[in-house]
Length: 389
Ligand SMILES: [Zn+2]
Ligand SMILES: [Zn+2]
Image (cartoon, rainbow, N blue to C red; front, side, top):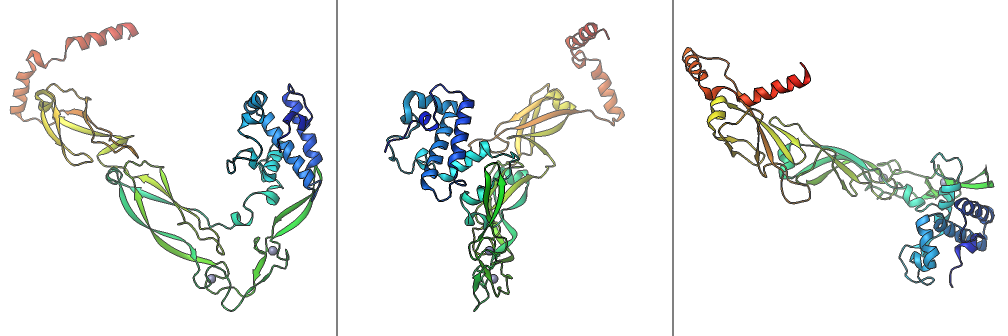
């Protein structure tokens, strides 16, 4: 069966404007909407067909492909080939209803549309999932650098073994929910711009299960889960930063009555370090050196995240100079290589001098080499002249 032309479906010409497309689709959608045509397979087909056409024509990129190459341009091939491709061949009623509600749902407030409960995917299964849990994990910069494995004790809702998650006491059974008569859903009538619309919502008495428990399990009080804790092994990769997280599937709260267990989300926090400040993959280390070391140069041993390392101080190093220890920073997350350790030098000026120190320094002060360079002063003088200060 070959597909009909999208313009023809909506009763349009090829050059139609966006607003004409919208108006034409709205008209067709209202006419064939399943709420106005209950149990009418033909109307449902027409509604889907019109929505599919609208979804293509309202999208300028898709429309262009369609105008140029027809259905083939949208990767639809011939009819119903290519099973499982997830393309338009799979366009079902819930897609169509969602598309319609998205553009014509009214109210606009972003809240769930009344149709989500009727046709939304998942239905019962989706509502019965345990909550995801979050824990924060504090890490030192050393732990971040090496990567660690940590055992975390997590308080969570766990599956009730007494009733195997059913919530039913031994020897007892479930009975049909009196409120929804086992349907798991209740119907209400509401008025919308489409006219009177039947709205279906999950039954609150049985939470959509269709059954209620006559004699609940004593351990879990019918919930099928109870408070407990689990030890979870967390492997933290090297190089994480504050705010990075990892998701451990199935270690969140167990679902009430045998649903899917939620996930555990572990969020990393970096502790402040006494010696190092982290800047991405680099770490900054401040190092005061003696005035003589700065003048003469030499070697010093400094701590790094990877153990002690030797730092070469060139002679004549000025205060504020930043020296680099390559590859002594934090490993790059999920990549090879490491950042650097940047060592910021401050030249420490002695504050207490013996009379011998003083006389030595006074002699040195007379030396030409101890005067700061002339060029620097003229530079600042020029700057002052320019600024007029
Ligand atoms: Zn139980
Ligand atoms: Zn019910």
